[in-house]
Length: 131
Image 1 (spheres, rainbow, N blue to C red):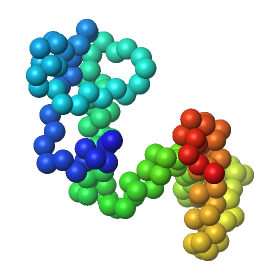
Image 2 (image 1 turned 45 degrees about the vertical axis):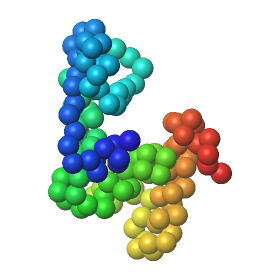
Image 3 (image 1 turned 60 degrees about the vertical axis):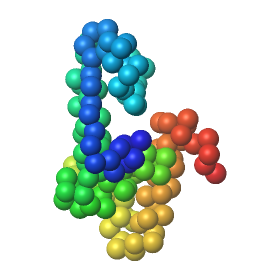
C-alpha cells in the first residue's frame, strides 16, 4: 500500500483523537482508511507519523540510495534478511563468511534463504503464497 501511495502527487492524512473522526467527514471526504494494527491509541498522530515515514522513505529523494527501499521487509512479501555491519568480528561474533566472500550470486542466495527462514519463523502468515 505504501508503494502505491508513494506514487501519488498529493496525500492528505487526517487523524482523529480519542474516538476518531466525525462520521460526516468519513462519509463524504475520506477515500481511504488505513489501520496500522489491531490495537488502540489515544490519537491518530502516532499512526499518521508511522504512515508518513513508511511512505516517505519510498520517495527517490529521501534515502541516500534510491534502490535501498527495494530490499526492505515486505517488498517481496518477505521479511528482510539479517543486517551486518563493520567490524567483521565484534566481541568474538563474526559476520557469516558468505557475506565477506564477494560472491554476489551466493550472497543474494543467502539473503533470500535468510529472508524465507525469518519469515517462516516470525511471520508465517506471509508465507501462504510461497513455496
